[in-house]
Image: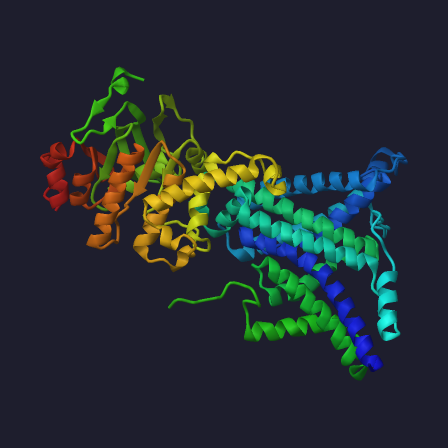
Length: 328
Length: 273
């Protein structure tokens, strides 16, 4: 087998793994969009905020320490304890649920029935607020996140591929974990939406508010639930990305990569978010591998958007989105 | 509660009609300067079919929306099962056992018939969010139990053949029946039907009438319905409230209402034209 094909296979696999991480972010968008028709621009920032909170709790950081020190003239930074990873994750989940409740209470329950563009603008406001709030609460420095997930090259895959091709593939253990977690998350979410009372209520609210009320579903409860779920997905994405690149404010930009993923997969499909993520991941890695050298590289920056643009022209509802039918 | 409510009567066809389950006292509803309902009182008794009729714009739908909590009257009281009801959100009213259908059909279009009817059971399903999410404890048993109840209703309303069909693909008459099934799945104390026969052809109207009578007969469900088609209503109901321009102009058995001069005037337009 020629070397380029073997390299291509490795690039393909790495593309799949990168795609999973994009899909994790896109998933959060789909959840909220499906249940409330809100395109949540703040999803990326929520992932950042979740990761910041997780690190802060684990390291025993004092929240708002800069503010406290500035006002009171004290010098507190750390509580002096370390919280075990699992407990810290549980506490962060609680924080994300509280955030969901506050966001619904203060913003979105007052905007019921508004135009989608108004709701979208509100989420942009939320994104900037949350970014600033995260900064004030936990500080702006880049933090290392280690919840004990395996990292580094997977030696088993390296050995096996070396045995077959005479060349060991480099696959990061973290990416494998991310793939497994994403698969579990999607299976769980789909099962929850299809076969549980609250999942059914969630779909009901997405479909028709009036009818949902008439069978005894509280809209506010469902909205808080959906934002909490999105917060949880954001936390998972935050953990994966944070472990990979450190918890830094550029994490909120990964939300932008989720946009082309959504255009491919459709804004309303959970499986679509996954498939869309994989296509973007594989597509940009393979494109860089095959075409990149011819055009001077750096194609990963624009390939996803280019692909999304082509999709917008030929299939605006995405691969799995609900078909857009205009009745005249 | 007064003494009247304890009284039980038996109709000519052998159905039992019990005490007052809901009483509207001096309800007035305004939208800005427009008075939609003006000082109306009436009651609904257990096990009866109670109709609210009137010409278009008489305030019938507004009255139904007051009962189901979608509108809140400025004046008057709603008494339910012997207690004055505080202002409530529609979902709370539904959880109290008042189910409804809508004039323009409000089904979950993207969901199957079965799933639509299952949402009607939400009141009966008690397991918490965590148990549901983890699929632990009672959650599964409860799903199975409720599924059985739903299948019974689906059989009863003769919609077995479309159980798995997405609602958006159904014709109008069947959609109305699915909506009835969903409301019925809640095992309501009072079933509110907003123009159940609107937009139907003669055959569909006859089917619907039969189902309404059967539901009342088989499950003893108390039914309050709105119609503007007087003929249909007179055959169905035990007692009829007649509204015109937001006011009550008649209340009694179909025969009493039929011979009421104010009602005749309202329908033939003598008083207003």
